[in-house]
Length: 47
Image (cartoon, helix red, strand yellow):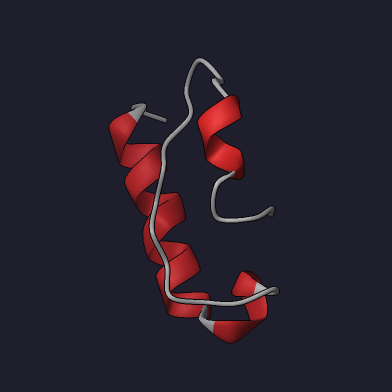
């Protein structure tokens, strides 16, 4: 996790940007939203 502008300098081959309304510890603040992002990534890349 990094600041809100950090993603602009990052370019991973399978990177997926996912906006979530959380703070510093997203996996504790909104577990359902994190799970939704993970499942979306898995579906997008056919895992």
